[in-house]
Length: 352
Image 1 (cartoon, rainbow, N blue to C red):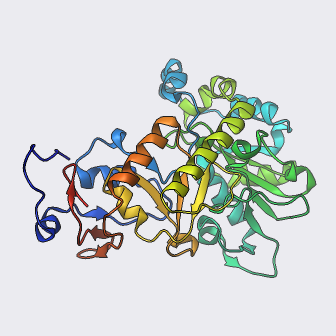
Image 2 (cartoon, one colour; image 1 turned 90 degrees about the horizontal axis):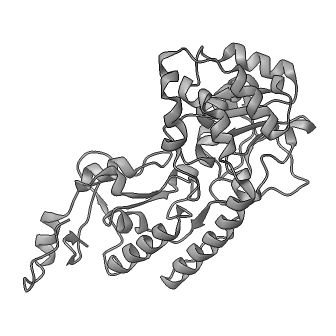
Image 3 (cartoon, rainbow, N blue to C red; image 1 turned 120 degrees about the horizontal axis):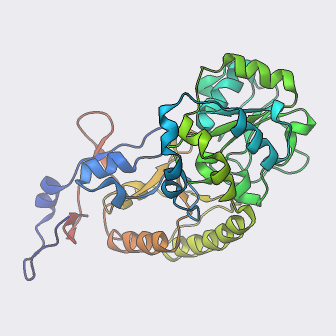
């Protein structure tokens, strides 16, 4: 990462190959920033991780939970936090189950329904946790769709709706499908940009369904820190402001990408899908910026890019400019998942 001394010429391409960092292959669910930091010898906090679709406008969750650290000495009790969350969303607490992130919510519900249709492209955890994927059965769907960002139309139905990104897309907690017989799962992890503080939820269509999930759930699934901080976390939520702000930032991201020759798909979410983007993940990774490669969605040559805040937009543009003439096609060599750059020039101390 150290810049070349003034006056020293860039090494030839063969030397670039020898100096090129081995970059990790894409993970199944994003969040590649830490692995990328290790490969580049960077502080993980210095990586701009746009492979995770988190809320760039969220407050600092560390400061919110800090007054509740003493709760770590107690076993978790989810009753008060469940009531507070249910009040915020506007449903009866007997229909709410708090979970260890959205992933546990998906796993619990999938184990209960067992069989459902999954139309691609969709989040791969649905298929992973269902006993079988049956195109004749009611569907397991995300709203807005992950990874396209398209909101479902009012006439569209599903057995299970994943609304992890719905509050940020619309400014409302839920579309209300649980009141019409569907199961809704969601994630405060995405909303509050705190992937390490695991808080997901299920809104069930009826009390009995929620009670059955709670019986299946491991004891003390949600940690005491998240539960103790629930009131303060909910007080920090500003869905209308966040949704409006994300709409503006998403437009700026789209304009930035178009200036660099990419065409993002229309999106209502806090991320955009970019087709015909072969090699873009590798280009940006070499500059400490992670984006989500979409092969796990069945979309080869596409990337999903989270909407960053203003500072992140500036850094993304710089990364695109600095890597503009890098060979976009990485070659996989050595162990699975290790990517190496094959050609390019040395710019700013990183082979490209």
